[in-house]
Image (cartoon, rainbow, N blue to C red; front, side, top):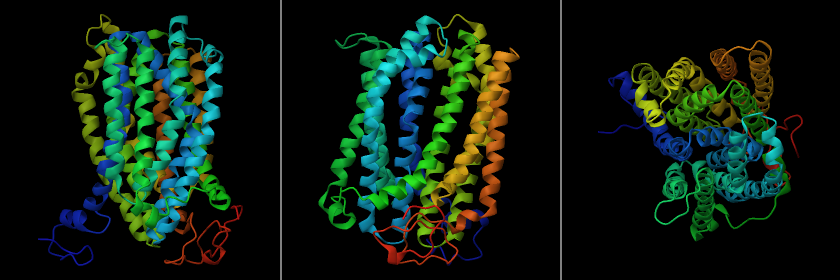
Length: 495
């Protein structure tokens, strides 16, 4: 028995209405679950790298974590801008402008290719970069080796992100999921062979883990290109319109640039935190690496939920239904908090379930105790991290990226400064550093929650709407390609 989302009988229980209504649990999960699998596939890829490296060499595992964070930071701006293609696609989809979807995806692809010189330039600079961290020589040596190889996969990661927006922005998140799973499967298989030297492959250790990741990454953009180039897509979405569109590209950079800066600032602050904790010694560095690796894998469903919130907000703002955009966000938040409550209980009551893959075989009980305590810190900040992820994603889906960038600038600076003070000036231990992380996430969560409740995002758009005219108060960047469709010019936006 089914009901229209707009004509549900009042006799239905509240949880059935919550599930069946427009932007209710069913609709959110239809988009979110494939995104959860996609985000988890990436994290499983890095998690397995580190877990296998932990068995191969604990030093290699520590080096892979710190070098991986820095590598990700290197491509954050490009990744942030190209991932913002999803907001454009979702709003064009909501406003029924399929012919604009292909061109905006290609603008993201061109930006992704600009990251190639950055990757090539970073490789010879790796020894100097990692010398600044002042880690032990054996750790630094492996960090450099891992980072240099990973740099070859950076542009592929950014390009795959841009291509994937063609499907995820339209709600076809299952396509993105399948492609991501293929890339992950290739990576895991190569990890097994290349790290330990099985099946006739050379034993490469940390270099093998890096090459496995690079190959797994580059497979994905080629698959996305083949899918997007199908005749149906070329006709309906103009995916063969690969030409540079400067007005559209400027608008993508205008809105996506702050999102990329936000990502860069957050990861930079976090990278500085990791580097400073590494100065406390091998054990705090390894325990922190374990706790963050466990949290990253377990937390990926929330990232998937956040991405689905951004997609739904974009689609419904494209339709000028900010009420449904708000409902989708709150529904997503409820699901995320329910999951996080379960995960927090498991961290506290079943910690060995998460720690075993790292601790197995170790002869250092002190390492286990430290990692266990840090896992309790993770449990303490779970709810705040969920809150900031869901609401910052919703704000991005509307175009409120400049506010997000400003908050990130302040908070990343605060995180780095407080951690430096704790480690270098006050000479506090690793637990004091983790108290700072909890404080940092709490402030972020409260800030983004109140920004969302304030409602300014409801009047924001990143596209020129045609079929669903905007309210007069809407903020919009007017494109040269379609000036007759725009209604209001946002101050400072490109024209």
